[in-house]
Length: 122
Image (cartoon, rainbow, N blue to C red):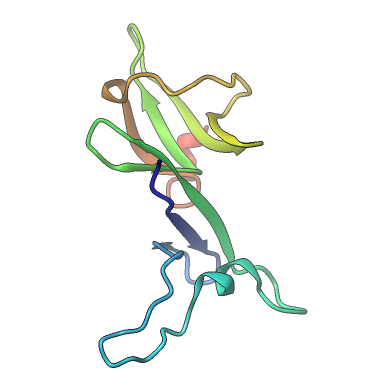
């Protein structure tokens, strides 16, 4: 069974927030200000603040978790190719409509994501 983990891009503060599925009490028993539901529902009349991305259950060659929205460098033959991880129906695939499964983890490396390094998608 794969690990369930989510991250969110905060559109207002322009930062990535990890492990948003964890709503917990701190050492003093105080409930943290944000919980998972806050990331999903902006509330009536409010603009969506967060873009949610799920962990694929896979890791790259450096052991980093691969999430939706990550830009991957896939080493094939001579030149590497770059693809964005997407969730489609009930599974993960890469961009460009090719619906390929991820090749060996030894040939895949995260080089950025669609929010912090959008220039990689060109």
